[in-house]
Structures are given as structure tokens and as C-alpha cells.
Length: 84
Image (cartoon, rainbow, N blue to C red; front, side):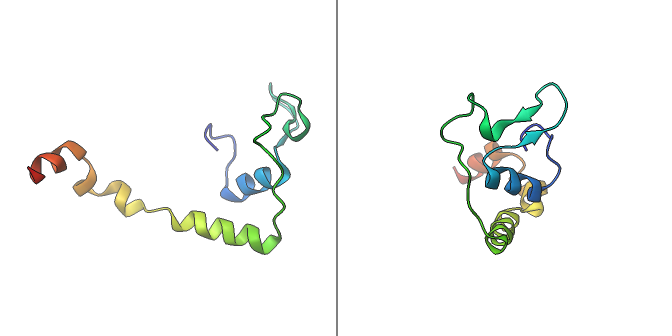
């Protein structure tokens, strides 16, 4: 996730499916799914195993390493100057 504490996309989907994560140890230990501090916007998402697989496939489809490493897109200011 955003802080690197979740290693895989599968884990992220599982966390959102249950409505929060349960951290067994570390400074932030506890079950965030039942925390009174949890935002009301974070809710359990009931997904079947197939829906989870479909969601992961969709999210992976948004990945594009070629775009991220292309020299053509490395300097957005250069691209704007070339259009003028």
C-alpha cells in the first residue's frame, strides 16, 4: 500500500474486502475494521473469489512499465515546448 507495508496486490484487495486490516504486532497493532477511529468511508466490500480475481486483473491492466520508463515522456516541459 502507500507506505510499503503490504507486499502484494492480493493482500490489498483482501484488506479492502474485509473493511480494514488486522495488524498483529508493531506500533499500530489492532483490527482497523472495528476501530472507532476508522473513517465511515471505509466499508467492507463483499466480493466473491471471482470478483477479487477480476479486480486484480483490472488493476494489473492499468500498469505500464514501458510508459513509466520511456524517455519520450520523461520531460513533460520539453513535450509542451515542442508543440509550440
